[in-house]
Image 1 (spheres, helix red, strand yellow):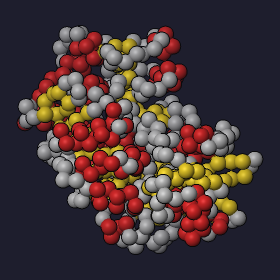
Image 2 (cartoon, helix red, strand yellow; image 1 turned 180 degrees about the vertical axis):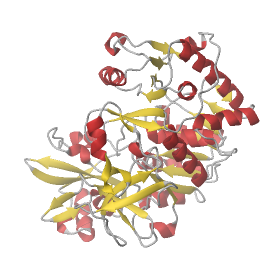
Image 3 (cartoon, helix red, strand yellow; image 1 turned 90 degrees about the horizontal axis):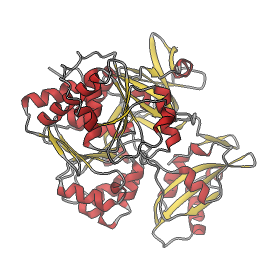
Image 4 (cartoon, one colour; image 1 turned 30 degrees about the vertical axis):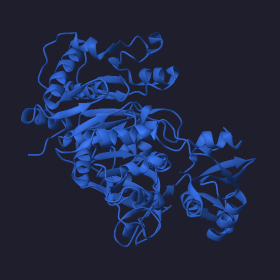
Length: 514
């Protein structure tokens, strides 16, 4: 019988394979039996400090075994775990803690929590503190699909952090679908790349544990150096990993990418941003035989709602499909007037229904009502994604752009993804990204291009004219050494604009598309 929640799956593996490796970082390693024993003890320590069902436990922890233990211990007592970025400014951490009002903040021995007085007196503890309680561990709470499992704080398009509450039912549905579609099993050895405060990392972390595989964790900062990634794949016999297309670009730009050829790595899952066909092909060229999956899903729909294994045939159309919705998930494409879009290749806004929807935004009923709509699709609550998509003749969905990031010039709707893909196709171009900028009320497109050094910007403009109509031509073409990433491994658009002297804090420049 399939586990009823993620914690039950982990406990099940501890019962049947207690000595099997579960999770390791540079400091320590736990088997499944050892993991569950420690989780139970930490849960007992949480309960002794007053943590109960529905309470929040904030995790001010880096990517580590400690994070995994604390998250599972929170589920054990029915609490909601809330990841915090240890790299965030103190003011942002304090604001999130004040908003979610956790019973505890769990931090690491080597993490400086800052001035704890600005978090309303919330106790800050370490994992040893909880283990040192010596409390008798109780049995885990009976699984309840409606109970909230975790909260992810994301700024989205508002700029203000908002807590997305994900229920156990949505959590296990997403994790189970991911594990099954990716083909994860007891032999899987997964390398965690994305930061754990970003729910994109959950697509590696929890499906691996659900399938009984082994997690390998390396410090997030060290993985920004590709040689650390390649070394971990080789030394730890990694078979599965997941990361953003921006991180893939970082790997492809490194001369050691050929180390993946003939390695144990079997599966790579991309997500968090739109992928480029050229970059997927480059990965296959560097490492023939690797299975590459694309996945898609806003935070509000729990980790990912689609996975699709990519093939050369699927990329022949010039875009990377996001696939079809997971079992229990429904997609609805609506036009600007809220009417269903019929037929293949017709673009509309995506609304998502079904088993993976968030519970709500924490403390924001009005914001929840804005996006969780019961008045759009008959007898169905759907989440308004703000993403423009279309469905092809095979039934696969393709991401086009953000609805609020498609610009119009001279009456023509322009997708920055299409412009970026055209720039990437030019000879001598390694990769490219396009960003909206505003100049005295006029909307412009800036193309940031990484080349092999053989092509000047003037030639790029000439080449772009051969690929794109005049309305879609970039207003600025900037040659850059690299495309910088944010802490969550997405394109750092503000940095690009700032370094080019194009950043205007009053415009919508953060709406750039990689």
